[in-house]
Image 1 (spheres, rainbow, N blue to C red):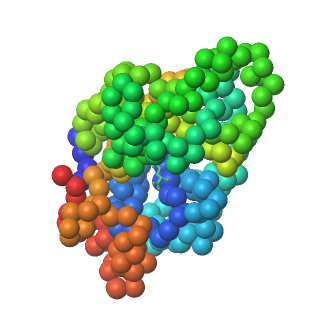
Image 2 (image 1 turned 180 degrees about the vertical axis):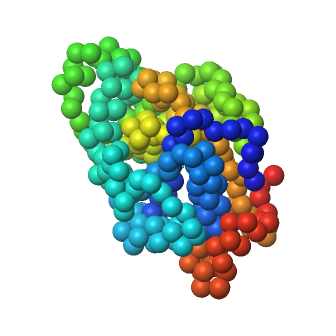
Length: 306
Ligand code: GLU
């Protein structure tokens, strides 16, 4: 599952970033175990950060369950919501001000624009035959590639950047999108999967950095926190490879240094489908109730995506 040839950097800081929207399953366990092991082998630190920004889907019950399940598995962290640390708070729901500063910076730099499209509008535009060619759906993370309807506001925002942008203190109930440099190739070396290559505008479109419901998107919160918490290596599932490409663009815009990337192959079920939180039978809780031991869960041979 891992590549041991590539030694981690000195001063290693890794992180575990669960979303408390359901019980963790065996796939999360394997990824988090890898993150734990790499931090330990590097003699580094591990940070636990709770990604609980989605107020509708996040539940306090799942926050507690994630902490309990990961501890049961034998994973220990040096900083986190339950143990504190100098880079806290470690619950994203308590870090609004940090994200707002990043949003303001992106606005001043003219990198984002407001978007009024509803999910329905986007789906309709994507489904309809589109001027200038067809619009591909983003299969990897299920987000349709934004057709660019509100991109026209980009120029306006860029013009006011530095003047009225300074007065604009809040995202004002709109969603905001990052303008991706169309056709730019985003390449990076993944420490587990090797060279990765994505094309902005083709593999993913202008993505949301601030949501209409008043919270930053996963992409923005994640890069802001990884930078603020001085994370040197991000270990996560391969389902987030395209998100990494987006985050590389955000890091560049915000002047952050990229961490190293290590994506773990995803586990699949009997029919070859990726595991998801809905596979309740494979939740750590259920496996523990069945009497499975942590050692087995982290080391058993399990089918992974090709
Ligand atoms: N919170 C994200 C998830 O559970 C992971 C984010 C990340 O590792 O960057 O899918």
